Amino acid sequence: MARRLREPKLETRAARLRLPIAKKAQFIKIGRGLWLGYRRNQTAGTWSVRLVQHGTDWSKTFATADDFEEANGSRILDFWRAQDQARALAQGRQKEDDPADDEDAEEPIAVRQALDNYERDLEIRGGDVGNASRVRAHLPDALAKKEVARLTVRDLRGWRDRLTGQLAPATVNRTANALRAALNLAADHVVRITDRRAWEIGLTAIRDAEQPRNVILPEPEIRAIIAKAYEHRAEFGLLVEVAAVTGGRMSQIAGLEVQDLQDNRPDPRLVMPSSHKGRGGKTIMRRPIPIPTRLSAKLRAVAECRLPSAPLLIKPGGDRWRKSDHSRPFARAVKAAGLDQDGVTIYALRHSSIVRQLLANVPVRIVAVNHDTSIAMIERTYSRFIADHSDVLARKALLDVSADELDEKVVPITAAR
Image (cartoon, rainbow, N blue to C red; front, side, top):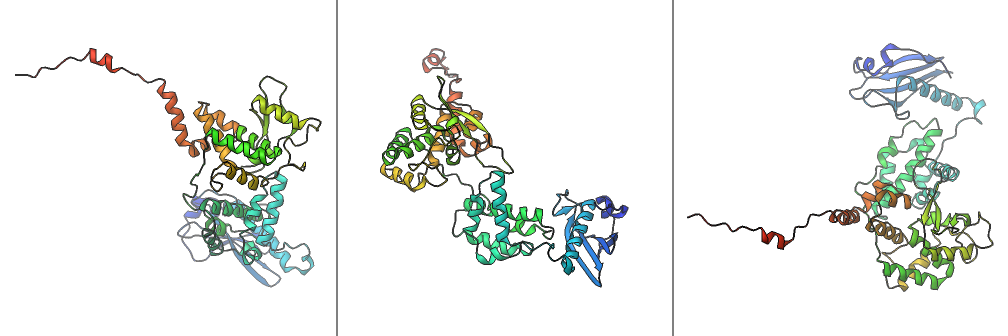
């Protein structure tokens, strides 16, 4: 790494804020033919780079100085990181200008390529590759071909706003978040992408979009759906029963292996894998979930003579269940049970499981662990049922003075004459 140079007037925000506001940047030389510039503005100052080489004079503003906000390593830089970024930009520029280095020059990356890279990254990290597919399904060709470094707020805000006419606000936010993640990944690895404001502003989330529409089913309706699922196929009925009993997500249930069935004990259970939800490279953990003895026996019957690492639940053809394999047969089971197939999805079994445990006075922390979610999410999404849960607990401690006892102690008040 090149040696960082000192400059007392620019090193600290206090020193920079003492400089006069100016229309032109103040430059310091940080290498051969290379300068780092700082321009003092009424708001935060800006960093720029200038490269004079082979008869050309090239300059570029690339970041905001940390005059009023903390540096974040990308859009807002301190003096030291600005030097590093200026050198990296100059190096990229030199490769562009040098025909001998054409093969090694950094190629521009389009939005389509950024999504492909994001999908590969999700696959490596064990994330949900459906996040990339969700964006592709709604990405116009013109935007897909556009270079990431040339994206504007107008490009992305227009795309997001057009989605609002096609999708629910919450779905728009999830789709925009996935595209933002893909663009951030591209910016992390491509030197020429220096400004993330286009997607930080253009893909701002729609406020108050998350309006929970959680369908909670009473036990008779859940039993009816399970019965109709078994009538469709025994394998599908078993899948639906496991979903209803455990409240697991389909990705978790599909990930169950034969060795996750612990039925050699008086209290059988399934060791449920965690989901891929969440940011970063999430480590898949497994937590025991209690199940009834009769369900345990059904699972053991289908698991006999299979390898411990084999999937526990399989489709009629013997393949592992995939993410959306259940959708159509579940809709048919719901309709056959006399329920609204548009409003009741398999996720209703998860919601019902969470509420069932809350109303059974299971502590919220345990409910959250059993369903691979957070206490905050439980409280935000199921607050009405938590109020019922707390009401049941608090009612046990109520002081109830009966009316008869009060009548015995009433003393008539005689009006004064």
